[in-house]
Amino acid sequence: MKDGKHVILYLDDDQDMLDAVRMLLEANGYEMVEAHSAEEGLRVYKETNPDFLLVDLMMEEVDAGTTFAREVTMLGNTAPVFLLSSVGDSLDGNTNYQDLKLDGVFQKPVHPKTLLSILKKKLG
Image 1: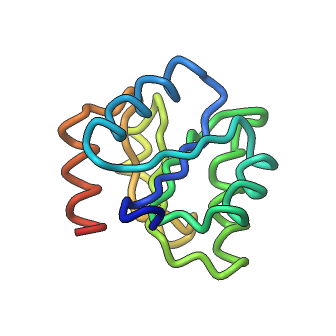
Image 2: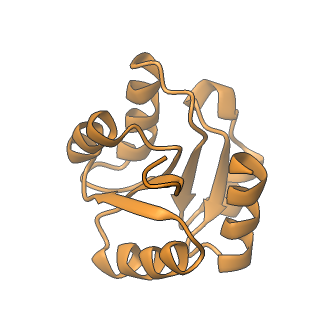
Image 3: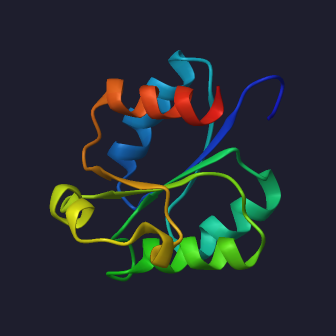
């Protein structure tokens, strides 16, 4: 938390998606920090210790999102990690979240009510 607000780290190489999600989160009382790559995401993660992680599957590499999730787990991450993917629905039915160190998968673009509902459920 920062200044009484839960901090959400969102990794995505699409600035339009980052901007849209930032507007939604900040309008609903969350603080958002962003990163454009898995490498930058690790740096921001270490600096901010976020309460929730939202990670695009495909950034600089096809599996950058899942690689990032595994790396933060090795760092001792306990915050929920959700993957965003344009193949979210099909990935959702064929994926073992524990193997990927994920708490769930959202279809991209994520529906605002769905995201806010999950945040409330996971963060209180």
